[in-house]
Length: 76
View 1 (cartoon, rainbow, N blue to C red):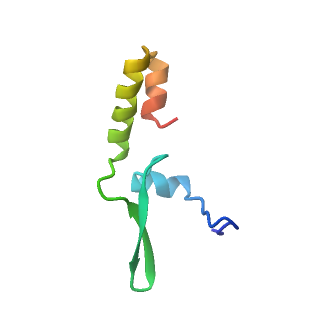
View 2 (view 1 turned 90 degrees about the horizontal axis):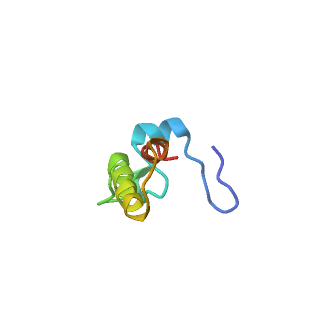
View 3 (view 1 turned 180 degrees about the vertical axis):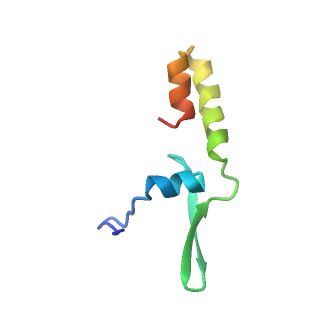
């Protein structure tokens, strides 16, 4: 992986899925001796909780089709 000029790194999809990281999720860096550890920020919901929260907000705006609900649960 390479760090961009803006200090950004793309986390591979397989790593994000295994770690349960979703778009807009807060993360933090922790220094452990000679390692830097990326982890979900304290108090941050897991991926399923985020999907449920988005569905609850969406329900108050308008009725969703089954396809739209499935897209939300998949993080699309």
